[in-house]
Image (cartoon, rainbow, N blue to C red):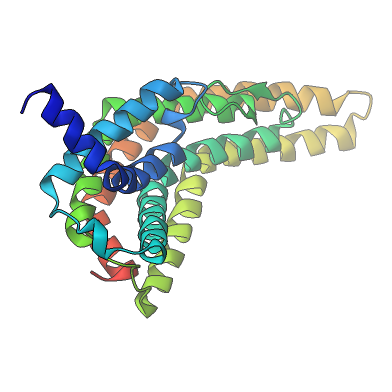
Length: 265
């Protein structure tokens, strides 16, 4: 295929390529790794379109004349729903780490000192920003993008481009609830070591305030809790990295079956 044939093929299948890129774009936009602050829009769009062209080539060709306007709208909505679901399944790890850091900062009292997160462009806390960046870096180095691409391409076997809206099964509601439960459980699991130490320091400072009221317990406790949280963070950082890698690979293997249970093939 020469350059002219390639341009002709792309022009004839422009709408189909746009349809295929919808699912891909939604998946990656949800993840903090592909924000406009981190990756230029031109580069992101080039990645989405190149992957969409691969999908269109390996998928059965669509009869464009047989698809009316309402059907095209339904297909685009379906692609957005499927992409949103896959993005949430993989984004739960990154969100759990950042949420755990924000909870820790809130308990320490340093949540008022928010910083600009270059990955998301939003305001976040100090430990929340650190854990969010750590999760993103480990996600990439542990092969998270490869696992995500594998699940994304496999989703086209479950729901081809020409398929209609997926039917939400009754069991899908419980699966969706279990994902939210998993998110909160992972958040608590990450934050619990630091929260226990902070609780002990708060209890100790309460006794100090009771019997030595001349001390400024508020600022003293904030410094102690921040120091203790940093020490505990360095102690548990290896376990946190291993936890992310283990859960990432485990969840990636279960993702196709989760999608089947959620919507049905």
